[in-house]
Length: 159
Image 1: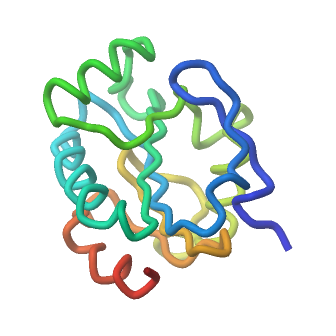
Image 2: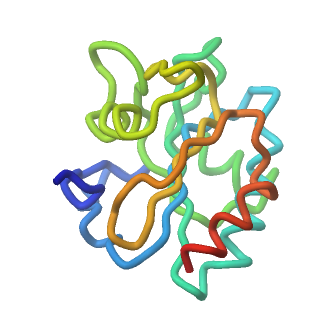
């Protein structure tokens, strides 16, 4: 059985991160963008991270420029924007594609594990969220319109 532990990603500092290091934590994996109508969700994601991080929860943000070119910046520009505007301290990864031929293998797996509305696998927009349990399995997929605050109760159940 595939779990999140089977994937390696790149941090926004260019370092490889084996996600097996995250086993034992509850994770919220999110494709993000700095110039999107949902960008204020960074604030809510940071609040979730602060609320639950001491209990084994982490948010992993994956900037994505596939939707309306809403994430045009470099890794440093993205990190600075998130820190200055939303106080983001949770880990940000390198920019990824979430759909198409160049999609991150992690996102291909996430989409196959939890399909979207009406069985679609494609991610429709920025701030699609995937909740991962401590064993590295995908528990739930959330639409961009699902606010971070609305996810808190599901996180709580897994902690």
